[in-house]
Amino acid sequence: LAFAGLFAAKLMPSYLEYFAVQKIIKAMETNGEFKGSVAEIRKTFNKRNVVENIQVVTGEDLDVSKEGGEVVVTATWSVKVPMVYNFSACLDFSVTNAK
Image (cartoon, rainbow, N blue to C red; front, side, top):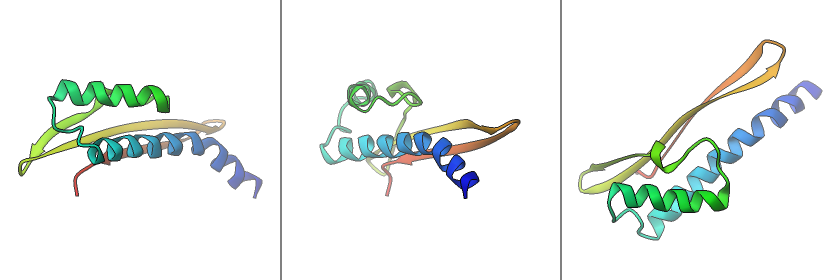
């Protein structure tokens, strides 16, 4: 039980950042902030990022593309979390507004 608690405590910050990025991208889509240029979308993400204090993803890390006339914003990143001794958890995250 203590081992599971240790894993949860070490992995929690990475998942909290994932949910924060997800929240920012969803809020930007809801507020219609994907209508500008790629530079404007990245700048808006960075402004929202200041509030959420996310360290792993910045506006420059966003992949902005168009699919079927819709703007698709994707953030993809990996995190390596040291667990115990030489054992680490490697987590891959991806957030997109595509349906």
